[in-house]
Length: 239
Ligand code: ATP
Image (tube, rainbow, N blue to C red; front, top):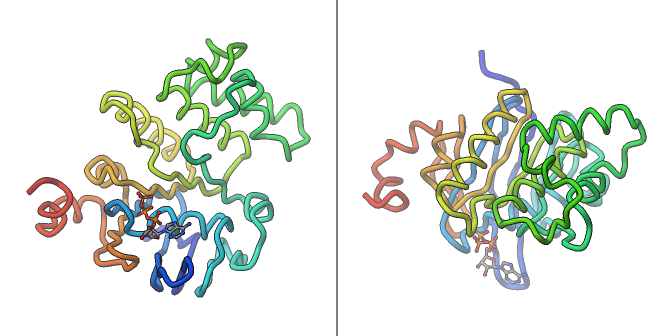
């Protein structure tokens, strides 16, 4: 039987003045799955994610998470509901240590024991963050900063993790490592929504996928189906 839908997006619209970036899209994320939204530069992926996080206004539509209506909630309330976005562009705090950056991710949580357990789990996923715990975050490489951004989001104990192009600007070998870790986190039970321009890698790890073009969903299916889809191959995978 199919896992239950945990996030439902109905008719989501995002506008910047006269520019309609997202034009009434429907999405369904199932519990315990990786769902990806792929598309070209400017297709409306970031706007979709920002709207889910409450960081841009929704011009229309509804967002339901596990029975709760998130449509009109402020960003911090959305985080408190368990929907946590990995900071954009690896927006880590470069003058703080790696450990301090991770602790910031857990700032809303009081239980020290739980926070320590989560820190240990993040260190297990990303050993380099343990090795560099007392070093300044600004001295990490691009790939390590992306790991730190993901680690920081995990410290908030998400029930749904949102990521905006974690592969951006990273070497292929580093991207593979990041994607492998996302799959590992997912296998441990976390639901993931991944927005990507790296269509091939995203479709490979996603159970469910949507293709967005100029603000509209044009294709959907399993990751496997879309990898094999002639139109996807032609437009996004180099034929
Ligand atoms: P990218 O990979 O470049 O982030 P994207 O698929 O995430 O692309 P969006 O960033 O959501 O796409 O942009 C969708 C459309 O909205 C584009 O036409 C873009 O120029 C426009 N847009 C995005 N942000 C703004 C803004 N703050 N003001 C005006 N237009 C915007």
